[in-house]
Image (cartoon, rainbow, N blue to C red; front, side):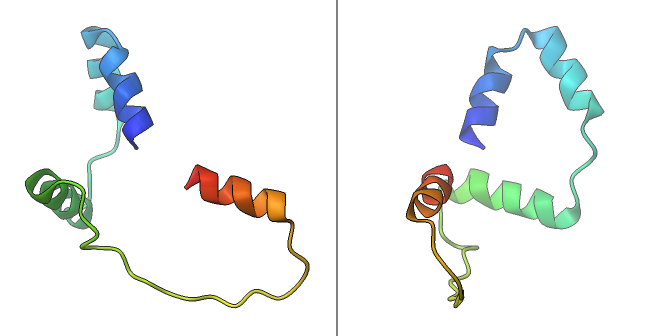
Length: 70
C-alpha cells in the first residue's frame, strides 16, 4: 500500500484526481479501517493470528519470495 501511495503522490494533480474519481466508493468497513489507521497509525489492531498446516513439498525459494512480498 505504501508503494501505491508514493506513486500516487508523484502523479500530477489532474491525473491523480482523474484516477481517484474512477475508484469505487469504500464500504463502511473499509472507511472504518482507514479512519482507525489515520487515528492510530500503523497498528496491529486488526491482525488476526492463525496457523495453517500445509502438506506436500516445499519450494524454499518460492516461500522466501512470498514472505519478501508480504
